[in-house]
Image 1 (tube, one colour):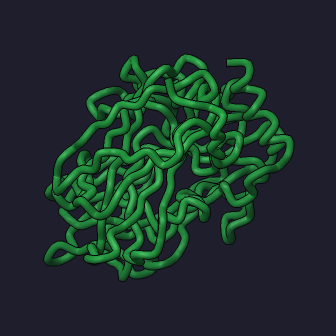
Image 2 (cartoon, helix red, strand yellow; image 1 turned 90 degrees about the vertical axis):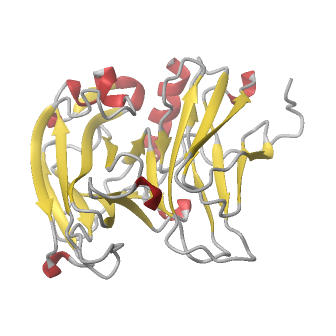
Length: 319
């Protein structure tokens, strides 16, 4: 745990990842997040119509911060329409001591108390052209309103995007900013989630990647993916894994693959890489991914990988 905290602290002090304020991050090569209205079919690529993200504000940031949402409305050019647009998605932001430390807030099961903490701000968006391809700013928030978590290296806020009604897909992204009118990075900030819902690029040449972090208690992981639509291959990289293939899901189903974690992989980042089919183009592919440890506890995905992107070392061999 101490080593984990030191890694986080080093990153914050060094100012690594100045572009980590966007979620998804540029280096993940994921264009957008996606949340469908609660009346949608799960076969469109959203299993529970709710996405929970956390942002970490470093101790060096004492001035106000803003959580900005790009294209928060549900009826624009980017969004995924099913018939006529009829969807409302609510964005709510939480701080306070329980927004992260309540273990149910980290539970991927929506039946848990995922709205723990103190509600700081909330707004619902339907069809509204004034927000189409534009930013909406929540805040200002005083960093002291977040939950201080020593092992995460800063104060934590939670944002929940939830489909209230309708069956369309709301496509959006976040930015952590010091300005309400433009994207000005909070140096050393980061985003993470325990269950990643995202839209893949339609470009067959694009390779997307996400980064779960395995702590010192992790001895194995289960990688679960939902509604991949057999759209290519999924590979796992780490200091000890060099592109091991992961089982892939089809339409509207989950599939799970278990991998052992060796000593050298503890307290380090794992990379999950998504490579689309080159022969057949699948458009508008939405995917959900979860990684659990041997206790069934979900591991966090950081948009900027803790300790950097893992580099395979052939000297480390799987047992």
